[in-house]
Image 1 (cartoon, rainbow over the protein chains, first blue to last red):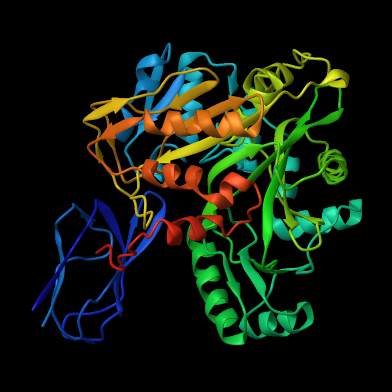
Image 2: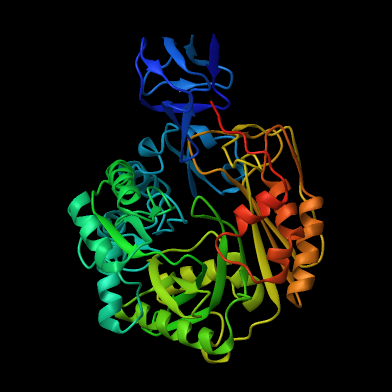
Length: 70
Length: 429
């Protein structure tokens, strides 16, 4: 099981995947926006997205959970 | 008088202003892009003029028109000039008509992916895909074949709609090796347009500038003369008033230049021009807006030595990812020929809402070697703690053979990073 957490304060701009989706290593899960920059968050493992903890428009803090892949 | 958002309430510029007015919450659309709120603040404080700075509404023709309609003085060119230059396709066409060289590319918006592929076949790969109303490198990409072009076109269009509220896309021939060189112009109150030398802005990451210098080590006297003349012509074509910048690309293989776009405002990197000319550009802006004379004789411009600006960003020095946070320590360097323009100090919080620029380190030297030595000392003497900054990148840049030789192009950042052995982590998430 891999937890994907935010590395910085950011705004969740786009959610690309849905809970239950199969994802491959390197797939874009969500796109964050911080300091006028878009930051894609990628899957670091292949598996099933068992939890998606953010929604578009959310403001997330450093360390906040974004998704869990199993 | 200054205006500020809730996110910036604790910043030095608010405390330093004679009067500061809160114009709204942190998101830019509710504050720094909120025209009504800004005009109300001007009215309340009895301001006579509005200086738009170099972000947000600085190149917004509608805002300029509203300021003028309200009876205030707009510190900038006419709304008409902003509008003509704000659309990159229209600006290209104007330049072609004025005899200023442009790269082969679109003379009208590209309708869709298929039209883009057809146009690229005529221009020849590689091509650059851009938002016509864009800026800051957002949505821009180079494409080497049809497949990359289709992907780049789709990305550019979605970014263009989201960031610039205009779906118009253009293609231009991409120069594999180029320097980004821009000319500072000043449209005087009497209608004359003059050029104040060039700035080399080839040190870029994500098509955004990180360091700038003047004079450009890649521009000789003949090329400089042609570029400055073209920039003056560009300004004259739109009846330009005040400070503006004509951005060009210099092809390092042919040594020729093409017009890229015009920024109808003051630039972030204007201090390097100030350092070699001794001219305060903001003062000239205000004088020109008031219909007055500039402080110098345009016929007797003097350029002295070399100047370099390093943009200190709140971002990690390897991947250049944003690093908002609270500044626990801030110690600025000092020394001869050094100017620090800083927006933050210890105790301030850098929020994720705006650009990551923290400060500009600007150095002047009697020649390039002295300027580089002073820059190295300034970087070493600048200590910021509490968040990541790109200061270590600047140290690597100044140490690198590429930058040191002056013989570099817009790929210099990636070359410096690979030499510095940066381990490129792949996931910020």
